[in-house]
Image (tube, rainbow, N blue to C red):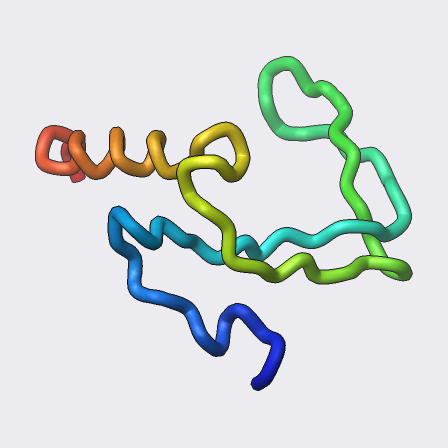
Length: 82
């Protein structure tokens, strides 16, 4: 699959800290209420117009440093009860 980051995904390492971004964008907005205590409306998106946003991203610079949060939970793994 030429041109598809998922077809040539490098192994994770300190020098290649990549993760797959499986986001979706676009679509028609609609509101719904969550089942939480505050019952605040949330905006969702439905067809038509949705587009996949599939790409390799640097875990430590993407989405506010997702990689650092993953490192934290990895370090807590043995202490978190199952």
